[in-house]
Amino acid sequence: MDNEALAMTETDGPQSASLQSTASSGSVAIETKSLNLWYGDFQALFDVNLQIKQGQITSLIGPSGCGKTTLLRTVNRLGERLGYVRITGSIEVLGQDILAPEVEVVQVRKHVGMVSQRPNPLPLSIRDNVLFGYRIHEPASKNMSRSELDEVVENALSTVLLWNGVKDRLDQKATSLSLEEQQKLCIARLLPVKPAVLLMDEPCSALDPAGTEAVEELLWGLRGKYTILIVTHNMAQARRASEECIFMLLGKMIEHGQTGEIFVTPENQETADYIEGRYG
Ligand SMILES: Nc1ncnc2c1ncn2[C@@H]1O[C@H](COP(=O)(O)OP(=O)(O)OP(=O)(O)O)[C@@H](O)[C@H]1O
Ligand SMILES: [Mg+2]
Image 1 (cartoon, rainbow, N blue to C red):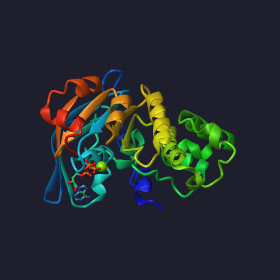
Image 2: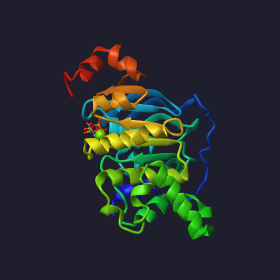
Image 3: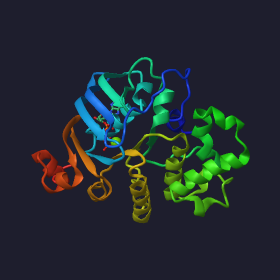
C-alpha cells in the first residue's frame, strides 16, 4: 500500500483544536509569512510570502527543483514525516496557523486535500476508496446505512464526472481503472470530508492529452467551491486552467499575479524567460 496515500488520510493523535473556517468568499484561503524550509543543511524555501485567494485556481510554476512540491507538501504538513525537515515562518489556512503546536495533522488533512503526480488509489474497491477518508474523518459515518453511504459515493463520483462510467462496478478494485479514471477517483475520495483546499502536484503528468483535458475540465468545474493550488510544468495548462499564477525560482517566490497578466506582461525578467521556454 502506498504509504504516502495513507499518510494523506492519517488519523494519529486526538482530535484537538479544530480548523474552523473564518474566511468568506473573496478572502484568503492560504497565507504564508516568511516561510523558510530546510532539508538538513539544504535550504529549499526562502522567505515565501503568499496569499492564495479562496475559491480560485492558482497555478504554481517554475523550473525543476525550485521548490513547488516542497511548498505544496508543507501546506499539507507532509514534510514533517521526514525527521530532517526544519520550517520557520507561518502558514495559515482559513485564518489558522496550521504549524501551531495545538493543531493536529488530522485536522489539517481534513481541510487540505492533496492529489499526487501519479494516481495513488488504495488497493481497495472503487467504493471503499471514496469512503476511506470519510470513515476516518466523519464519526457519524459509523452509524450510516448502506444507502446513505451509497449517496456519499454517488455524489463524490458525480462531481468528478466519473459516476456514469463506474456505477455498475463500484466493487471492483480501483486499480482496474484507467489512469485518468484513477486520478479522478483520487480527487473524488477527498470530497466527502469537504476540504476547503485541494493541492495538486502535476495531476495530469501521467495522463494522455484526452485525460489531461478531462481532468482540467473537472478542475474548472470545481472552481468557486474549492481553493485549488496546482503545480504544472505545462504552460498551456497554467494559462488555460488557472486564474492566478505563481512563479518560483530556486526556492523563492518571484512573481504572483493574474494568470493573464503574468503570461502577457510579466513584471520580472526571470518569469518572462521561463514562460517563453528559455530555461527550465
Ligand atoms: N526529501 C528531500 N530531501 C532532501 N532534499 C530534497 C527533498 N525533496 C526535495 N529536495 C530538494 O529540494 C529542492 C526542491 O525540490 P522540489 O521537489 O520541491 O522541487 P520541484 O519544484 O517540485 O521540482 P520538480 O519540478 O522536479 O518536481 C530540490 O533541490 C530538491 O533536490
Ligand atoms: Mg515537484
